[in-house]
Image 1 (cartoon, one colour):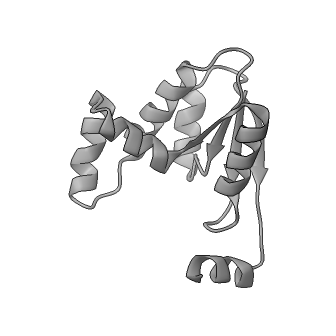
Image 2 (cartoon, one colour):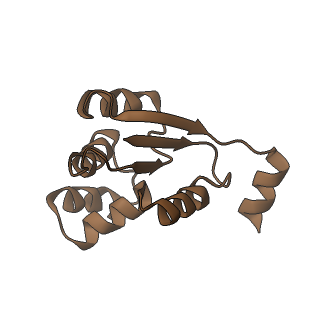
Length: 124
C-alpha cells in the first residue's frame, strides 16, 4: 500500500514518515533521498536527473514520476511505502496514478500547521 503524506514545507511530513517507518518496518521515500540515491548509484534515471540538477534546474515531473514508479514496482503486496511530499502537483498525481498499480494508493494524509509555526521551523 502507498501512503501519500502532503503538506507545506516544515509541517513535519518527513519527521512523521521517518518515525512511522522505523516503528512499523515500513519504507519511507522522500524525493530528495530518491534523487540522491539514483545519482549516487549512477542509474540511468539518476544520470538523466543529474543533468538537470547540475545546471540548477528542477528535475522534470516525468522523470520524477518514473523514479517513484520504479521504486513502487519493487514493493511487495504487503509492503507499506510512505511517500513524503510526492506528488506535489496535480500533473504529478495524474502521472503517478497512471503508472501505479490500481488501488496501490491506500491513503493520503494532509498535514497542517499555523503559518507562524511553519515560519519558525523553517527559519530556526
